[in-house]
Amino acid sequence: MQGRFHFYEGYNIATVTYPVRVFFLLGIETLIVTNAAGGLNTKFKVGDIMLIKDHINMPGFAGQNPLCGRNEERFGVRFPCMSDAYDRDFARMAKETAQELGCDSFLQEGVYCMLAGPSFETIAECKVLRTLGADAVGMSTVPEVVVARHCGMRVFGLSLITNKVVADYKSTEKANHEEVLETTRMRTEDLQNLVSNLVAKM
Ligand code: HPA
Image 1 (tube, protein in one colour):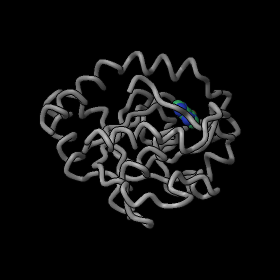
Image 2 (image 1 turned 90 degrees about the vertical axis):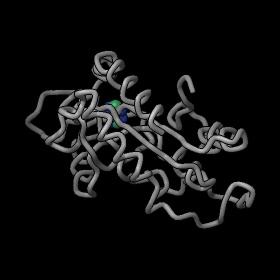
Image 3 (image 1 turned 180 degrees about the vertical axis):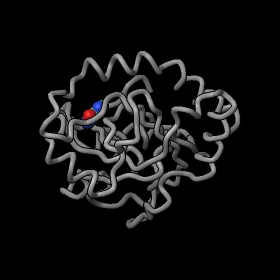
Image 4 (image 1 turned 120 degrees about the horizontal axis):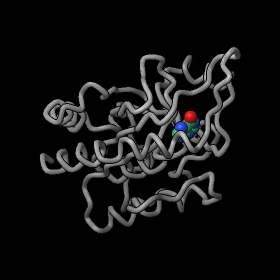
């Protein structure tokens, strides 16, 4: 896809995930998701790439799960498992690929938390997310992954840590979209290399 629908743009959660259902009907078996995310884990640096090993569906906590409503059996079961959402074989292959490409020095692994956005997080919210076990926070991806897993697609995900979240009242830093774009430009080629080499192995 060239871009995606975001919930914060005003699309409902069914529209956000509609392309994944189209992929499934086209016979696509694997979904690779990428996003920009703020680093919550204090060990992460700007420019790190995080293998998503699990997620926290915060909009889902608030009733915004794309699978709410009548279940379409042709896509999947009513109550799909999410404890194996991110394919472990693909994660292992990605680590190997990163090593081969010399990207392993900035490869991390962690839990991605989705918030609806579009406002960035408050300091108190960042503290809560850390306590919950999130390593990175963003405004996308999770609804698409839930729908992909519902219909049995294998999922592999990467977050680019475009900025560190502000989680300290003494800090004068501010989250801003320009930093997100700048880090993305800096790492686009590495990300493309990693994904295309991984696809070749898949
Ligand atoms: N918070 C939420 N979403 C984001 C961030 C962030 O700090 N950076 C990039 N996407």
